[in-house]
Length: 216
Image 1 (cartoon, rainbow, N blue to C red):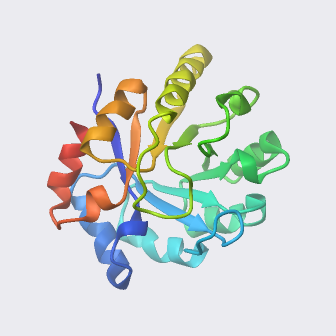
Image 2: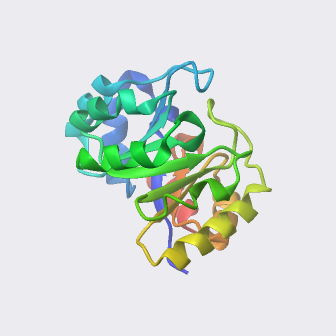
């Protein structure tokens, strides 16, 4: 079983020195930088906009993995692409025309992803498997960091892994929420190949050791 890619979520970083934190996790062995964008509507919290993505872009050559937890994400997709995002992930629950939104994102020259909240069935992906580049399974309810992993999502991860394999396309399967050394192993065993982790990376100060522990 290949070691998973690790995408530190800057939601758990020190916001007073965000550029330094991104440089630190890059040097510590991260594979992507995960940026959670929340609008106070689709989820109750409010976080970052395109200007922050633009400000962080010079601090790492790693892909910027931007998770749009926002209503009608197509309104801001172009701004985030211009700001330097490499991957834009939208929620299936937040768009009316998912296939149209994904193809629009791809037209901007970035990779497109779909995220599912815990209550959304994997069947929501069935008719976008031909276009999507990344699938993000939320293993907590989105909106806040520090929540506990929902074990029932492991079956969804397994099901989506089978869908990806059947598609014969190079689609990343990412898992976000409550990831630590123990839940990371369970998620990878179920089929995940990218793990988003916030506190599990940034707590304690030794980012390299934390990333190694998540890789198993």
